[in-house]
Image 1 (cartoon, rainbow, N blue to C red):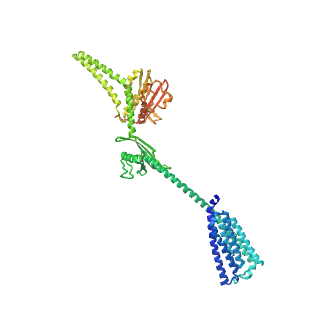
Image 2 (cartoon, rainbow, N blue to C red):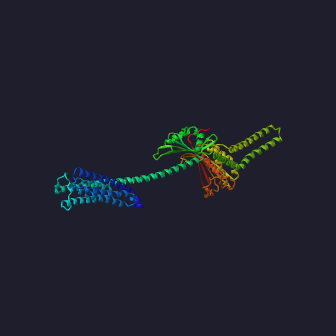
Image 3 (tube, one colour):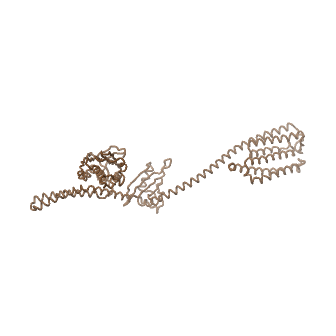
Length: 580
């Protein structure tokens, strides 16, 4: 069944040619009948046409058989169909030989019709079979002529056509046989060569057709897969909470999801309900043009629009030849996350204030004690103006000290948004040291400061950076329960490999218990604490790390058990920074 299905196109083509041969045979039979009738009744060339009519009748009989046979021909092997065609051609050769015999033999010019028949055989059959049939044809015709020449068979002369003695002329007979045989084999050669080429082309065409059909099937499957992936991606993008917007190379917004539609209104003022595919404008247009010139990714974080915060990521879309096709924007509404971060920062501030409570109380109690003493002394001698003025001055100084302490504490604890100004890291450390002095003294910790005098200003939020340094300082104090040395160092790095630019740094170093190796990988995780008092929130280093990253900086640390830890905050210096 596999072989039959494989040869099915060849079978169908051969059946078509057999039917074509049948139709030609009908024409040949009709032509024989007409020619014999005219030659015998009109021209009186043939004396006895009866044998010719009989041969035409026999040809008619076997020509009917292929009309029924092709109905089940495709069910037979290809070789069986070829044998069927070869059998009919052999019958034609014998029929044509018989017709030639009863119509003049070598005198009959229609002997060259054998050539047409062999050409047809070359079309239907293989080259080998075609040459065998040509040889058989030559033998049949040669045998007919020789048998007539030697009177084995009677010769039927064509009256009034050629001289009667011509069929007895050896030169004429030899010439006819030579011309016939050479023409016959040359014709078979040409026909088989042409058919070989045609069959090769046909096989190539069939193979190309099969390959094309396979490719069409593959393309249909690929098209279905692409449509499935496209629909899947469209559904995914449509369900995303992030806004997705695509700006084509003509700067038109050509694709967006539901979230992107709202973000276009809020960020860029593009209303897709009014204009289906609006033209990009403002920041979106500028970034799209920058990306078209070779940039790959631009991230713009913490973009504030009124009371909302967004994080935008812009990326160029290019083809395999690096041609710019457009720009894709993914925008996330991080308002809730931003507020939670602010709450975390504020919570950590209040936790730090709680840890500083004893120091703050000390800073307030000492001036209060002085105030009470001054009041008692004034009461004892209210008439002493000189003493009253002196004590009033001391009382004012004490109140200002209390006001400064409370103001500093309130200033630190107040909730703020990120506000970038020119900041000196030396001033940041000084403010923190003033808050932790008492807590450090209580534990017998010595504070040392090593400042670089001409330290470049950075651009940052002073209060948030104070919180970072305070968190690191409080962790250092907690790591030295039996006292030690807490050292603050500031300086600059000409080129930091991690930041890729000049950086200022503040270093907080202690001589405490150190951080165990298993813990070091988790110290920046939220709510993870190792403080001895077990009163830590676990947010200090996490919040500090987030604040430093907001300033595009990094926190590095090194720690050794029983030898202490060193935390270094590196922040980029952005050229000239104006003081606000």
